[in-house]
Image (cartoon, rainbow, N blue to C red):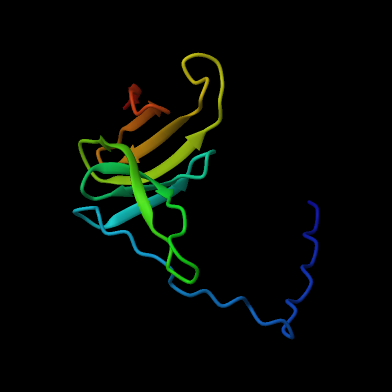
Length: 123
C-alpha cells in the first residue's frame, strides 16, 4: 500500500476572504434544496416546491446598488422536492446545447434540454 502524502499546514498568517450578503432571490414557495450554474452563467435553484428555476444576473442599475436577478424561461415542474442538480455539457443529439439533470425526493432523475423540455426520466 502507498502512503498518503502529507499536506502542508495552512498559512495562518493569511486571513480568509470576507463574504457579505449581496442579493437575495425570493420566488420559491418552499425551501431551496439545490443550486447549480449553467454554462452560460445562469443560476439554477431547486426547491421543495417541486420546481427548478433559472436566474440571470441583471445589468447593474447604478453604481453601488446590490445586484438583481430575473427568472429566465418557465419553472421546470417536478413531482416532488428537487434535491440535486447538475448541468451536462453539449453532446450528441438531442444534447447539442447541453442539458440539466435533476434528482428528486421521489427517487427519479430527470434530464431537460436547454429549452426546458424533459428529454428523459430515469427511475
